[in-house]
Length: 193
Image 1 (cartoon, one colour):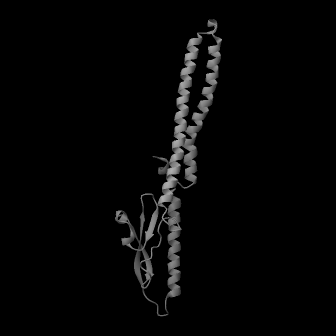
Image 2 (cartoon, helix red, strand yellow):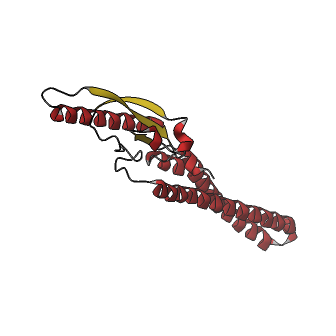
Image 3 (cartoon, helix red, strand yellow):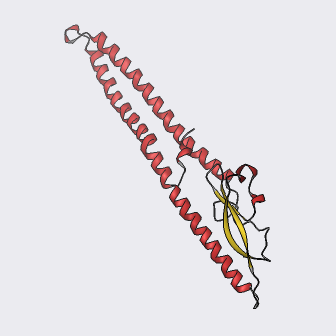
């Protein structure tokens, strides 16, 4: 999960560096202005989104102490106010709200599966109690109360069906939903509340 983001970030940084270098070559006068060293700053917000900007003053205060300085040659007359990348997404738009909605959707998926599991487990307990009551009242073949034994058998069949629901819900919680989230590139923490 982290590796694809790191690779994406490295590719974005390399693409930016090649673009800046190509623009500097095209715009340089014959005499050539000297390049000065300027710095890009990279930081990661609390959602794990990597940001890059060209000034430490553009890094939010709470992330400044963790911002990493990146070397980047630029021409003297380059626009120093331009922000390189607004977020870890290539479009550069703020995705905080979209991420929050997506996180809420994944958490709701897990909540629904847990609720289904709890309901099925409760139903199973009720069926176990009902079956046990029927078997106690049956008293054995000599009692002549065969209807309780038949009812107990029906309850046992229903218990098997409910157990299948329990197994499916546990599999959804432990395997299916986390696997779908992994394939969708969702941070593992999004599945926890």
